[in-house]
Amino acid sequence: MINSWIFYPIFAIVMILGALLLIPKNLYKKFFLYGLMFGGIGDSIIASLYTIFDFIKYKEMGPFNIMNIFSLWTPITWAFAYMIFFYFLPVRKAFLVPYVLIFSLLNYSVGLVMQNFGLFEYIGIYKYFAPLTFLIWYSVSALVYLRNEHRTNV
Image 1 (spheres, helix red, strand yellow):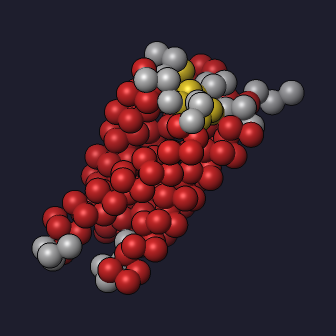
Image 2 (tube, rainbow, N blue to C red; image 1 turned 60 degrees about the horizontal axis):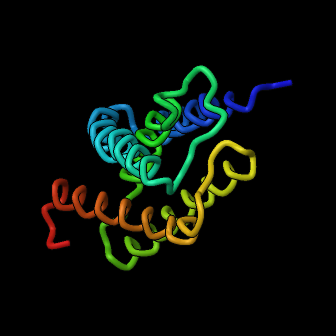
């Protein structure tokens, strides 16, 4: 029988390959820095706080367990997911708002699928508010990125 913790590195590898295949090589550094800041570090902070406040719980982390809070692979996965998010981020508001909303709901859905596999849990009533966390997280990230990179009045 395959251990369920194997999902974490497999999902990370899929995201890494996705980023490497979709993003031009000359842009890796730029998007990796943003992905690391908002995805990797952002996830580490949010997962730590939300675990302490009993909003979420990662499960079945196996040998990659970091202080019983999250898997070592989780921030890596988020970093590369955010690289893809930033690379395709539209500048026009007509496309930006639905894009951020869709990414937020997609990530919430990934959490629900992980919950169905017994790898993650939205605890209590937070499962209804989790999409709001993703919406705020992606919205702030997009605004910071656009202000830094495009110097617009976003």
